Length: 99
Image (cartoon, rainbow, N blue to C red; front, side, top):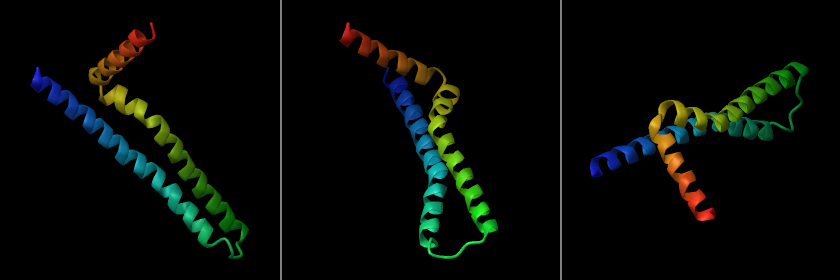
């Protein structure tokens, strides 16, 4: 029915919106850190400062890796049957076109 189709579209839109927000929040710190390191690249740094900056860089890099694995958890855990049914339909359409 039309109401269930709208509800499905809304839930898929909400999951996509959450994914975009989390992706931005997880990747933006690394971009800011890279900009910072580019701006201060001409300064003399102590070994402690280099170690701290490397730690922060690795922490932000870990967040970026998390951002790439996050859609699986968003769609399978919070999406529930909505995502699984949409995925099954999509795979079925591809299968019908190929065979």
